[in-house]
Length: 115
Image (cartoon, rainbow, N blue to C red; front, top):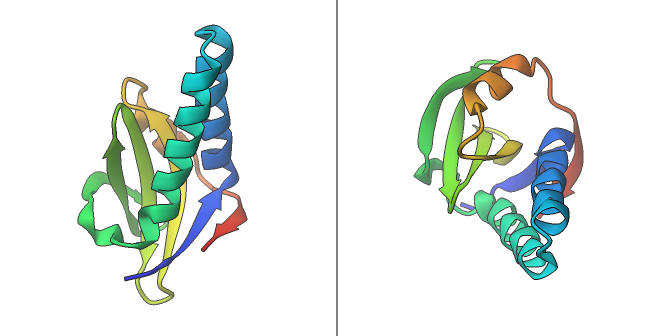
């Protein structure tokens, strides 16, 4: 399909904090580097088949929020089929209260464009 992928500042911060936790708190720089690479790869690939992944049951500005599971991480995004764009909203650990986190965010900020 090749949709353009746009990443919110919030999703970028999520990845930073997840990687930082592995690097600093778990004292595992190799695993942190691998996690960073893998999460970025998954985000970049979201434009290939965005309709492939499930509905999270939540909406953002009238758009269905989709959820992609990658290992123990969840990538949340919306699709604009008309503009052929995927908007990555958040990247969270599956044990987090992701429903609450997503529902508490009323606006997302976009400054990172990919593809």
